[in-house]
Image (tube, rainbow, N blue to C red; front, side, top):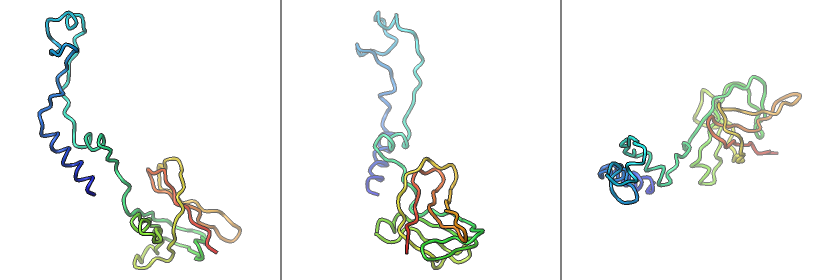
Length: 167
């Protein structure tokens, strides 16, 4: 958090400063339209004044947007689905919380859609690297009697969250 405020402060100072870098210069130190032979032979190019934005400075300083702390997917299990030791059927919310994960707590909670007070299932997910998902996905393994939740992934991310085998 401190790094974010430092980058934001630096960006504010740089935006307020005069853009000395906006003028084009040649090796001899004069502006591009001087009487030196190098300027007369060079093609005329219009230089646009471009002032950097706070986002440009933040990205240049190494600030990369971070995934939200808490993400969720609403799912509808039409057939019975085994998740850990629980069998789920109907509408649920799968929630992943990075702060719980950082504290060593179960990072994934699955709630009944109409009751978010107590999770019906909670577990530590397994990080899986996948291609970037266009939409949020839930992967189940189909069995004879019921399905088994394998993993889920949020739209726009390359990280997926695997469900551990609990016996």
